[in-house]
Amino acid sequence: MSENQGVKMSPFQAGGKLIVTILVLVVLVLLGTQSFTIISAGHSGVVLQLGAVQPKVLQEGMHFKIPFIQTIVPMEVRVQKSETSQTSASRDLQTVSTTIAVNHHLDSDNVNKLYQQVGLEYNSRIVDPAIAEALKAVTAQYTAEELISKRSEVSNKVKEVLRQKLSTYNIILDEINIREFTFSDEFNRAIESKQVAEQQALKSKLDLERIKIEKEQEITRAQAQAEALRLQKQEVTPELIQLRQIEAQLEAIRKWDGKLPNVTGGATPFINVGNQ
Image 1 (tube, rainbow, N blue to C red):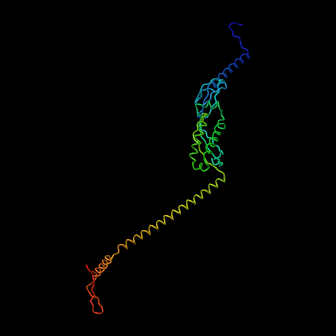
Image 2 (image 1 turned 120 degrees about the horizontal axis):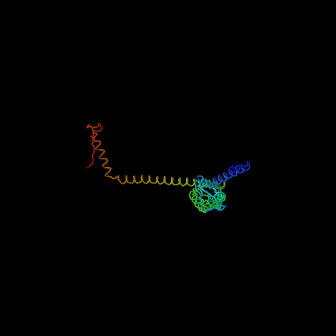
Image 3 (image 1 turned 90 degrees about the vertical axis):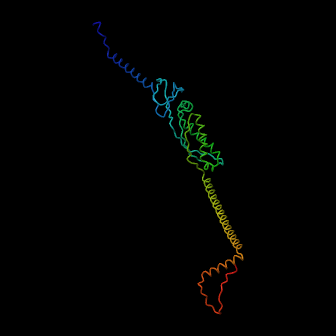
């Protein structure tokens, strides 16, 4: 055999080399895919290095990470809605059932702290209990009637208390909506009876005012009539009576046609025009 002739590889050796090549390619592909991560829109990424939470938070887009050393936990930072029904007591010890909807979102720059302190179950562990505590704290400051008449004020106070509680865990409160306050049947009947009584009292008051005004109007008319009669009485004097008689005689003269009336007895009628 010539020295320049290459040593032929056995089929076993060739197969082993192929397997090694494939394994190397697989490792390279795995390293490539594990070296990058993509954070979807509306999310932030918590970086865990060998299980420990890292200070850096990944925002939307593609990021490099150390393969098999670092893992990324995505957390949604879009607005989320929590709706719950709670039962509490008013200041006058009435049972109040409240349905409330809360919009909130995570602080995208501090999701790592929330994950480290609470984990992914922050709604059930933090948000829902905070809503219940805020409602109980605020409703206890108002009577049942005030919860209805001052609903806007109550809502603002609940919002402020809840904002403080959630901000401790880097959860930002956006808005709340108290859908309704529900009371016991006994209280509802009492409110209805009170409203009926108030309406009747208001009607009686209005009727009394109407009667009073009508009476005052009658008195005013009577006084005006009395005053008119008094003035007329003051104006009727002997001179006025004589003047009216003269005016009547002058009117008769103007209407006379120059003919004397036919009378019995021969006397000629004469019109007295009075003394000037």
